[in-house]
Length: 105
View 1 (cartoon, helix red, strand yellow):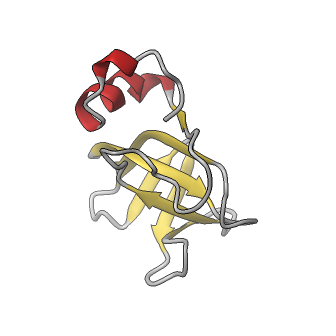
View 2 (cartoon, rainbow, N blue to C red; view 1 turned 135 degrees about the vertical axis):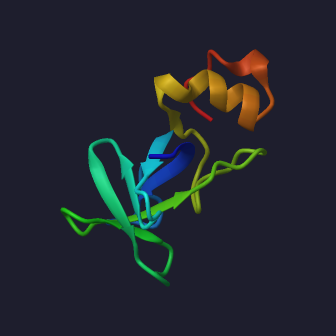
């Protein structure tokens, strides 16, 4: 399975849901995304949510992280970064290696 750093935000209860930056993996077909023990599938045209959790049906926004930050669709900054991707996120995506100790983006 391919793996990639992505932004994952729960949109089930609010447009400004909780989000994280972490490493997701993809199925061979690319139709499913796996993160945090969950499986997500595309909503194909959903409004403000592009994936859903196949077990719970909860809506999610999953996208590549932005080089300039501001990954949330709406709301304030302060997105948690998973520990296992933090260094790579700050050095290869944000190009700010001096910030590798920061746990939020």
